[in-house]
Image 1 (cartoon, helix red, strand yellow):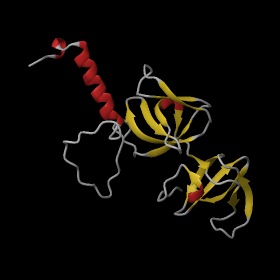
Image 2 (tube, one colour; image 1 turned 180 degrees about the vertical axis):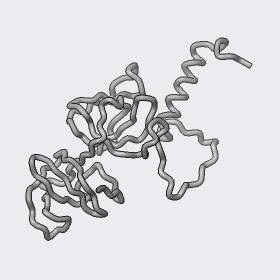
Image 3 (spheres, helix red, strand yellow; image 1 turned 90 degrees about the vertical axis):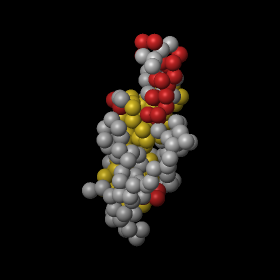
Image 4 (cartoon, one colour; image 1 turned 60 degrees about the vertical axis):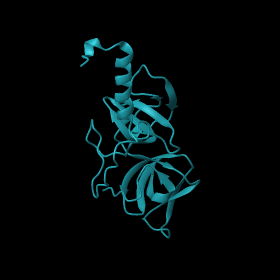
Length: 186
């Protein structure tokens, strides 16, 4: 039996890489020989570090955040998020690092200190009307441009109340990114 002290540096790096790849989730590390696990009904996947649901939405705390290839400062920066409040989806956790994606799937590993639990949404429809009530016939109070970042408030099955630029109103969930289709918020 080989002890850790008998292992070479190459073997230690290989073990460390395997641990990081496994922490990155099934998109990076897959063992095709492992039996498939049965789906767990009504069970939510939880992060190993925070025990919070995965995936989940957060927002960028500052005006800039580096997304790295792996969960450490020694990994290369692949992407830089440059919009304060930008909604991001957390898909994996490893120590103080969270693997995040934007609306287009771009992203990487971001240090948790750069993320906020404040929920925001990205407008995906140009000149999106904000309405007084969650109904298409309700009066329009404002319009939001494509790509605008709005604060996410309460959500019903098909509508969410958002605010931004001093305005507040209801928008269809299908017109924003940053909230799941079945998600309800008070």
